[in-house]
Length: 161
View 1 (tube, rainbow, N blue to C red):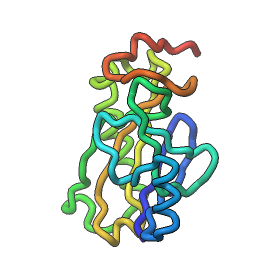
View 2: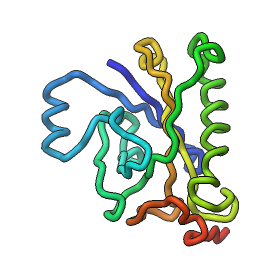
View 3: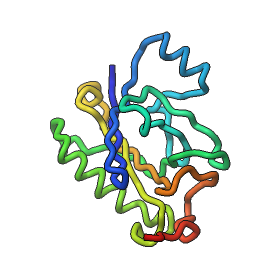
């Protein structure tokens, strides 16, 4: 079993994303239209249901013009020279910096000028042991689901705080 973890900074929520080889789970996901969490690519929009559960095997990936919670905007691997072993605090710090750095260029607004915010998936200890080194940055609207791609849309979602 491999796992990925999500950090949604604005919501202060952490969720563990687990992947299993269980055919019953895979069949249920297929029936529900879900895809493996590791299939998310930059530009994909998805719903991860993290508000309801702490472990997620898969996500629903609607078109970005349909209601969705998140959009993947940056994906990168942690350098093995910088991270020779699993250090969750260091990984979280790197993901925070890496996703923050790419956020404004993606949405077109500084983080404090828009209701859009960012979170990230990062490897769990189990996933790390199986070779997972990916950080997946995701953008979302703090006001709820959106029905359009978020690239360049920061000014359309002004911060009202």
